[in-house]
Image 1 (cartoon, rainbow, N blue to C red):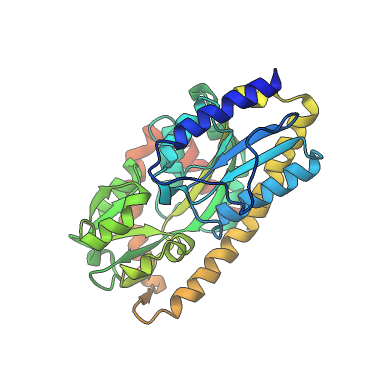
Image 2: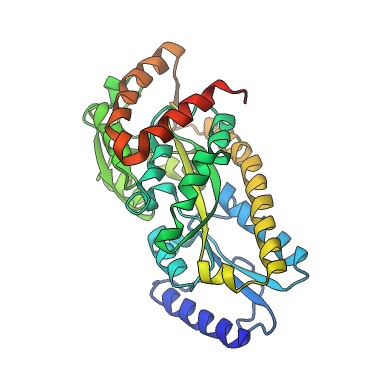
Amino acid sequence: MEYRRNVIKIVCFLFILALIPVQTKASEDEYIPLFLPNKIIVNFVHILPENTPKGLAAKYFKKILEERSNGKFFVRLFSDMAKKGYNDCRAIIAIKKNIIQLACPSFSKFSKIVPQIQIFDLPFLFTSGGHLHRFENSKYGQKILNLFQSKGIIGLAYWDNGFKCMFNNKRIIKKPTDMAGLRFRIMPSEVLKAQFKAVKAQPVVLPFSKVYNAIKSGQVDGFENTWSNFYSKKFYEVQKYATLSYHGYLGYVLITNQKFLDSLSPDLKKIFLDCVQLATQYEREIASKVNQNFYLKAKQLPNLTITQLTQQDKKEWQRVMTKIYPQFYSTIGKDLIQGALKLRKLRN
């Protein structure tokens, strides 16, 4: 019966991938057999390259889950799927149908079904990685993850990318007034829309897979993102200016399917969830290092001008952008926002 279920999952998964114009393959170079009797197949799909924090953590998760289960699990990785036209929204649909068993979409992809997740989009709310992780590990962070279950999804953990900077190809941005009139790509989030409107910029919602060409063609002037995404996807080819604003946080929710989780024996479920926690810890440890390494590489680029903000500059950005908080008390929850502010006072 288990073998038959695995066969059905694989056939359905290949049907989804058949919609992608370029043939897909697993991340390993060697051939991976599709039919694996007596193994629990975990299809893990994500849209970023393997050298990003998410990509590295996915490989680490595969390694430890297969080792700790003595080969009872087999994790089939599908990395950098944005190149093949796949996106996080399709991954969420596939998770709900149990066609794939793991995905790690960005927070913004859940803003319609779990609007509380938009707390992570609020500019300058989280002052450091330590502050951020305290919130994610707290009752407030768990409350948000629990909201996913009613939507047919299990929120397993928060994974980091990092804090975002501003990138554009028009001019040096040092003060909030420098943003006026620029068209900035955003992820689908009412918070991000309000953030850019607060500085008189024009927000344009676009999927990540279309951002490079949108910048190249002039559809948008810039975007906000982390150094790992900026460098690994070669946005330096189409962007001239970077501002070290670190104004917001970009993260992901590692998700799975309830039926898949319930199908595991108690022992295997414990191994699976333990490996999720170990991979989460690993991902957090490497995320800041990876972003720092990509930033150092970007500093060597001859055609990229990087602007550092003074403390006074940053205070002005904070003054302008944090005015949007009250707009989202009812959507996100005033208790969650105040909880995040309270956690600032604790040590990192």
